[in-house]
Amino acid sequence: MAKASSRVTADVIEATEFPHLAQKYRVMGVPKTVINDTVEVMGAVPEERFLDSVLAAAG
Figure: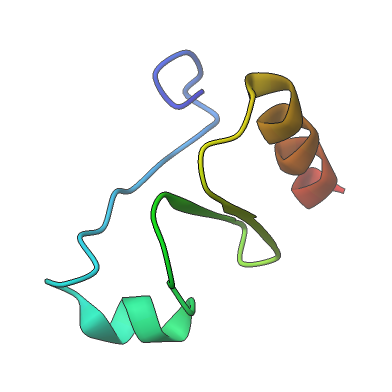
C-alpha cells in the first residue's frame, strides 16, 4: 500500500535491533503489523483481511 499511495507510509523494524519497540508493541512473532497504534495484525494474512484491518484503523 505504501508503494501504491503517497498517503500511506510504512516502516520495517528489526525486532532484535530495536528491542524497546518490540517490547512496546509486544512482538511475539513475525510478521506483526501495527496500524496507527490501534489495530494489530499478527502473521501473514490474506490481502482482503489486511485491507479490512487498515479500514478499521482508519475509522
